[in-house]
Length: 114
Image (cartoon, rainbow, N blue to C red):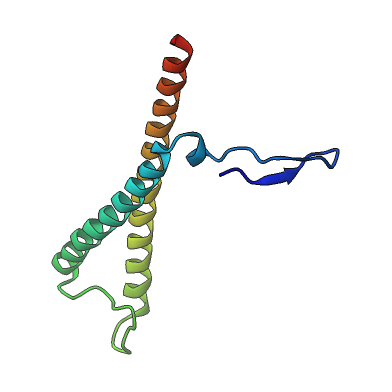
């Protein structure tokens, strides 16, 4: 469904199509990207938890740390999980974007061939 906007001269004109309106497949790819990101981060956190236990001999710091946990451990855990989670999310987002771009390019080329 098209929205409406005003152009530079103040005329009422249809708004530009969003990328999901241009190609409905993009919506599915966005959902896939979100699910893949959540799954990737969950798996990474499990792996990081196992690694933390092997290296330190302790459980990783909790979300609501007790007073016995050292700030050093809390900060290191936050940095490690933050960096790994961000790298996973950005990597998946870039891959999904590339797949959407490739799909849009192939759709456009097939339309011009007809």
